[in-house]
Image 1 (cartoon, one colour):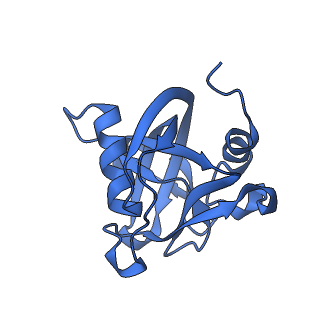
Image 2: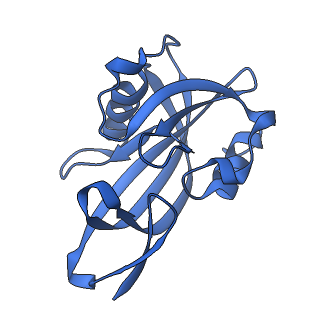
Length: 158
């Protein structure tokens, strides 16, 4: 049995054989002291735009697709920032994931965000530019300290 963290923050134990291997990419996008974040419909907390990489899809292509679906903006991928392994349980679908999370620093090419009803994602809602100074690790769905570190850092890409 593998212990996973659910979308609601609970610990859930599931059989190793039921885990789905899921590589995913997330965009750290900062502009003028604000971070582009989205909210989880189910968990209610922030997370970075991004999501699953399909088999045969390049990570940068997947990241640009996911950001466009969830926020409506176009991005340039600047550099790789961090890798994180995760065991996650998605309660609404009763699925457990062995997540391979790739974080990238990105620059926005466009700035007009989707209207809330236009977001093309099962769990993402309310894309917003949020003041970084008002954010705390506990405001994030998961890995808040790591994400907040990216958002506050000026030298992640070297």
